[in-house]
Amino acid sequence: MRHVYSRFIPLLASSLVLLAGTSMAAVPSETDDVFTVGAPANRPATRGEQLLQGGGGEQILAHLAARNDGTAWLSWYHQAPNQTTYSLRLQRIDTEGHKHLGKEGILASVVDSDSWVTDYTLLTAKNGDAILAYGNTTDYTMRLQRFDERGRSRWGAKGVVLTDPGMWGYEPNAVLCGDGSVVVAWSYESATDRGVALQRVSPSGTVQWAVPQRIHGSDGNSAGFPKVIPAGTSDVIVAWLENGGPASGNAMVQRFDRWGRAVWPVTVQLNCLDPLPFVLKPELVSDGAGGAFAAWSLVKKDLSFEGLVQHVRADGTVAWDPRGASVSNNPEMSHVISALSLIHGHLVVAWREMDKNQNGSGIFVQAYDPNGLDPVGQFGPQGMALFDPMDPVGARLASIRPSPGGMAVFYASSQNFPFDATAAVATVSLGLPDYWPGDTTLSPVASAKSDPAVSADVDGGYWIAWTDFRVDTEGSDIWGAYWKPPHSPHR
Image (cartoon, rainbow, N blue to C red; front, side):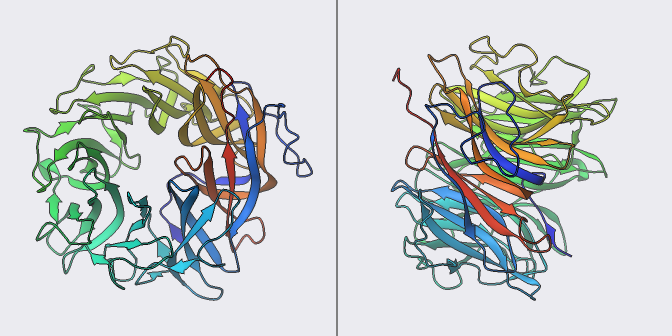
């Protein structure tokens, strides 16, 4: 039985729609044309959905990384028909969906995963090369590999091995630093301990530290599920969870220098005395000044979730209320943080909202200025609802990206939740002169979809890719669509 550690809760029986503004999107039927669901004359450029990788067996867990030449890297796991193992493959596509590395891409992994997979990281180097940080569920070795635009390995056939002998690694998270080096963080287990490990690799593929730096939990807790972001030219900020019991934990943040040494005298505990649900990792984004913004959900006494955000300065002190700023003052609802991003100089957080019985699932957004306040006064103390959680249409979030005059919020909505779902992206104003109103269907086909990935800017637009089960419930393919918002007439 397949076991996938996925980034997002699956989008079941879904079709992809592009919704703009704050009104509810019409739900297309299976016979709707790709441009017939409320699309205005000033619609964005879209290529419609495409089969990006198929060919039998399973294709799952796609990642995207933008290049600056109008193409993007696409990676995914492939399981051949009648096989049980998964290999990691790599492809390069342009905005038309043309493949530059052959029909099936190239084999990127050295060792296949045995019957189940964990998440991984795909990056683009400064010169456009692809960088993959990945593990496997056969020997649990962490590797880093780099490929040029033609798919040729830069760092040898076996890549760079990150784990020590006897160390099992899981779910690497990697970041490209300003000096061109790559820092990778992953959860590990060994015969003597468990925790989070860090390693730094130079642009030439040389490991920078003799052994990985290890982060252990405090007070006997276990550390795991790391997230790493850049801080300055060569430092990184790492967030991780610590857990000492079956249900809750703490979110910790520390800055490390180029030698792997902790910079802040005291590791920051984001959640103060409030426990976090251990399965929900905090979101983290650089503030551009050596610090970080963080967002997380904590468990309240009634077992509902409260969403909070915090600004950690470059010196390791918190800028806002020590407890964090609540994303909403509505105590009757649960807030499950799903995405965090800096958009046009504003910190934007988005979350799924449910009642305390977890009925319904809406999407809300909130924005903050450097003081932790709504910068334009348009979202209100409870945030702006893109989908009301008590509406028959429920929704779950994927990602946030900039768009002219505001932001594009990629999400999945569903009627008769969790079935008959629709995935979409809404454009929302951020107090700037204009934003594009309307909606565009990206995938009119009702089918089970999961693990959506959204690229950074590719020639002024974005690729979104997902795992799709439309042909066979026992097999899956990678489908995607390219969406380009229009240029603002006022810019």
